[in-house]
Image (cartoon, rainbow, N blue to C red; front, side, top):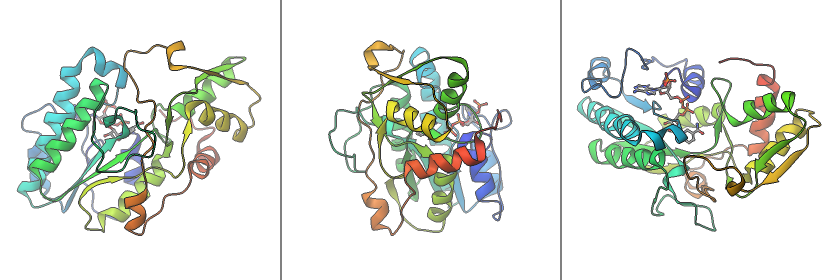
Length: 277
Ligand SMILES: NC(=O)c1ccc[n+]([C@@H]2O[C@H](COP(=O)([O-])OP(=O)(O)OC[C@H]3O[C@@H](n4cnc5c(N)ncnc54)[C@H](OP(=O)(O)O)[C@@H]3O)[C@@H](O)[C@H]2O)c1
């Protein structure tokens, strides 16, 4: 597993603890190192879960070459190594491969058209993964939050403790996804032979404003959440306005994710007082 110390990687370690795992991450495993694939071929796993990535969406606008080096070139190294040892590759990708101009949930066959450097690098990573390792599953997820690392839910809870009012964008829609739920679904997919691209998020969708409002309500905070537009809060990277991912293919495989509200509640139950970095 790459990205083992990251937000998703930490939950994957927990969920997959019954499996024999090789945990790869910085500093000993660097996707920009031309030879990083050797750590994978040496371990000769049956499955490679590639969650390691440059995930700083705004930072990638300032250094798109680094995002490409990690998310595209690095993914190619991982994919070639997986192919060399006959392993299956599960590459974690993102809703940010889409431009967000859609008006119905994106299906796996919809044409990607990233609007940010991060999205472009992840999209290139998908292409390299699928081209370099025949037995690849690209799992696109979205709006991820977990107990480890920084994320929107933790930021909202922190700001609620510091500010009288929160201002949150109400014109971007997506699918909040609890990392633990995604990790549990990945465990099921490890045992399944599905290939190609698969969308996996918690069920349902909302705007960031609706998400923040629900975080406040479920955590018992009285802080008002004011809706604003994307234009009110300029950021270096453009975000898709609508990046809802369809669960249709996942359903056809016989799988179903919990709703985003359910995922949020379980996160709050376990993580509300967590200050884990
Ligand atoms: N977070 C989201 O909202 C979201 C949404 C959709 C898809 N995804 C995708 O889901 C996957 C997991 O995301 P996450 O939230 O768990 O991200 P994360 O917490 O940032 O974890 C990524 C891991 O990759 C490591 N990494 C960064 N640069 C590396 C390099 N050059 N070589 C090797 N490892 C490197 C990071 O190390 P450092 O922490 O030391 O940099 C970190 O441990 C990623 O592929 C991401 O693109 C995330």
